Image 1 (cartoon, rainbow, N blue to C red):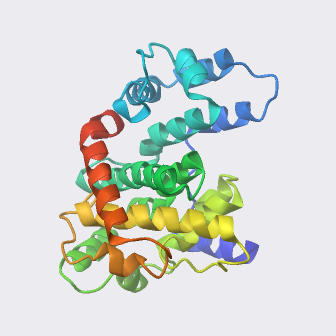
Image 2: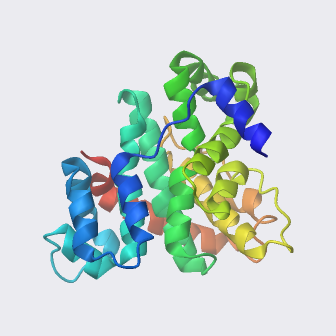
Image 3: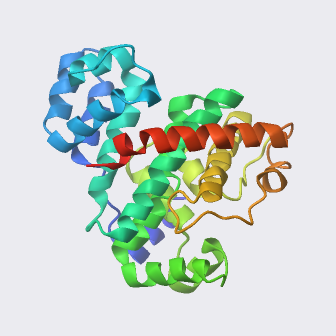
Length: 284
């Protein structure tokens, strides 16, 4: 595994570091003596992240009964696990070298899948909602690295997918030595993320883990996989909706027991939530 990790680094160059504010918050969370004020002080050093967290905390996504006016108050109300999710979501934007149309599309893809994964986890009781949120957020982080490393070839892949030349997974083999899934796994390993999340980055599309031996991981993978398909169906993070996608047909064997009416209901709920709260997550 370590040699594979090193091979990815050698092929694509230095992997991005975790955003500074996220690094500090993750470190503080491991300190049993930390306080809400300590966490708030660390987050407040990044004004853009702080503002985004407050905006998200006050969105209908978290259904707060009263306005959250300070980061410290947000920590107390939302809890540390949710705070970690919001810090990572709010700071992820910072790993981009530039922020044009492609980066906006990738950012929407990440946030859309995070919101969708959390919703799927809640409605189907398939996984921890915050772990699912992070799984969706980081499932395509390898694509961010590809776009940062070689934007011209990354654009070729996106255009090829749009023109019907193949799937992203098929076309990326022509332009990059490693898949976005393998690169994503390497990034999250570098950031010392839990094994389940590194495996979501690696297997969010193929679900290639033993279902019976690792049921919790498999359920997390399926949760993120469903959210991924919801995003594709609605065109979130893409040029347009995938009208040819039959959600039930592509998910029925991967999520036994799921029914078409379940998917219709959660697709509509996801559409409403994303349209209602997208500005809180996506605007500066």
